[in-house]
Image (cartoon, rainbow, N blue to C red; front, side, top):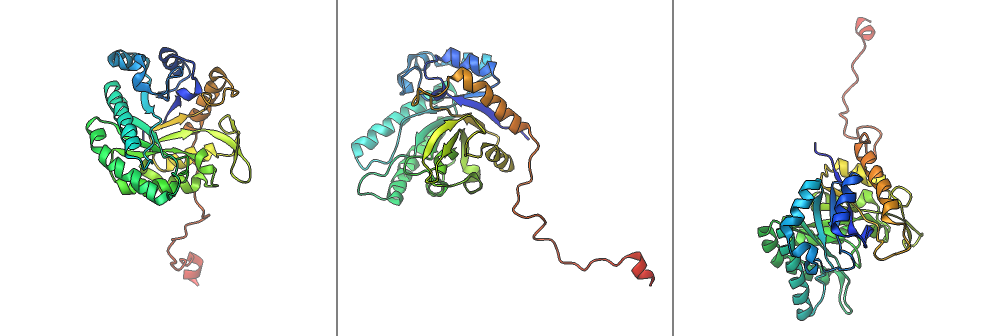
Length: 303
């Protein structure tokens, strides 16, 4: 069985240019990267390093053995305004076109927020309607749209509802357990529920208080997100895509530098991927064992 791959998001290293990101990924044993902005430019289709010569970018990645796994966008599809929805869909189509040219398999969008005087279920239904319309073009481009849980939709039940409503192979989930922790949902609920609907996992760790409020990001394995258990559960689900390390240095400048955090994150992920699979069961025995009569011993038969 193919093993999971590891990668990191450019959120970790917001000041690095693309050659540096690729070189450091290869140096520290990462097999993939996600681009969520480059050197302050968050709308990637506007960044000349990518759009001017995509073939040169592909050659650099191929030569380094590092895969461009995902392009992360700021797109949301929750607005009731037709004008705003049109603007967001135009941006998403630009990302899909760029991903196609770069040979990148995924474009990520955000689940988003619930507008005023609206409900979660109505918003999810509206997002599903938009994705149903966008999915065929993404499939023709060889790109999968990933919806990341978060905002007003951090839980797996909302993601399951959305993806089931769309029901298209070109729309899948990017799962972030730290977002689900904000509503007290653990990986033992989230990951089995979504299963094969997950095409990318954002792996981060953090501390939360009793109300589920994030207190601060931590190196992998030092927070409350049960990162090792997530990896074990993903093994059980035969997940073979990428674990994408996320460290939001772009938003929180006080976090340790990428040179400090990335080597240790790579070691943590590789060690836990390689570790022997634990037996994950709520039962100490086989609850479905047949209730046959016990065979008599030879001494009993001789009596």
